[in-house]
Length: 184
Image (cartoon, rainbow, N blue to C red; front, top):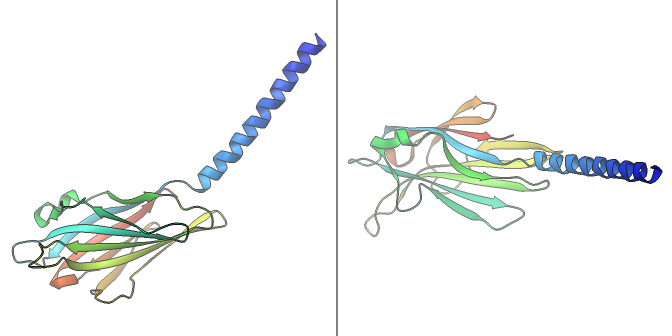
């Protein structure tokens, strides 16, 4: 009977150690939860094209721990025709994690699609979102990058503690957008 008790005690100890290990792993996973950058809303107040704009978003991710990546939303050759911008709500622009020690820069460009070779796409505006972890906490910083050809952009301030509202004036247009980071 003593042998049976010892086996039972050893099994319980093993379960406790395994449980503590799993709790430790889940804490690490929690510290690097999946994030989403969302386009909450986009509306055109003035168009750049006489016959209407066809809009898309290009997101370029730069990380100090990997190669640059580029995403287009919606995927080429699709776009949002200005009369259907109401469909551009709650759209995920980027999804991923920020590892400890990683710094991510997302360049979010809104463009009006044209059809080469007669015309190239027109930039409506580019925004920058920097993401990094400091002592386990996610730090985000929205900005308007200084770059050649950057149209006028107004920062209308915080939508909430996790997002921003901007007005972009590229190519004689006026687009108001709201962006937000979710998952932290």
